[in-house]
Image (cartoon, rainbow, N blue to C red):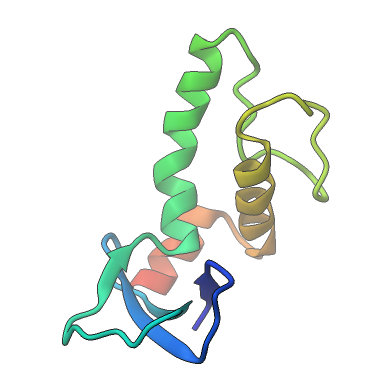
Length: 111
């Protein structure tokens, strides 16, 4: 399972489930997770599909290129873009898929 977290890894893990596809993973947390049910969020693939269109609309509204998630090889020439870091992360996630993220997500969600 992918691990994401805030860097406060003290050996505790919190289970998370994607609210779109149901994929499960764990994140590091600083205290023991006390609940019997997992926390919720978006897995990387569902985040790409959900967030990308929203941010691209915002970019156009702000008068910028609608290029979110299109960075290639970890490079983007829009260095002043407020979405640069999440764009680079999500571009890397999408690039790691051998096929389109929609097809990949459909395959992953059915597991």
